[in-house]
Image 1 (tube, rainbow, N blue to C red):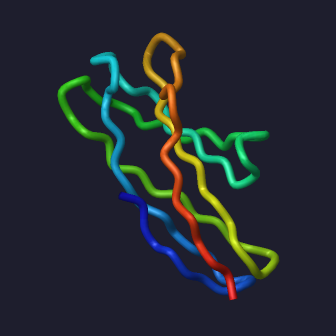
Image 2 (cartoon, rainbow, N blue to C red; image 1 turned 120 degrees about the vertical axis):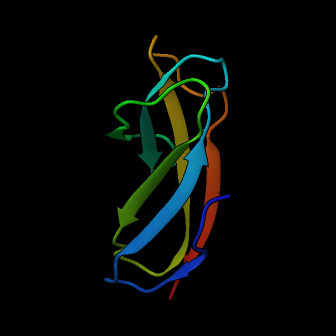
Length: 93
């Protein structure tokens, strides 16, 4: 689950969620995209283990109203990204 689902132009929104090692390898980073996957912002997760979920947060400041979609994917120690990114829709007023 990724939250929140509403926001306002010019005010930072912090999304939060959890990732897990989909292939039982250690997660080394979480990547975020607000442009449909054209570009990704990487966040190092430090000392994760394959047995534990990784808590992450991502702050975004919207510049225009309307529908926005956050894509999130985990990257493991072998450089493999999640096969299907998670997504969250947010409406900006």
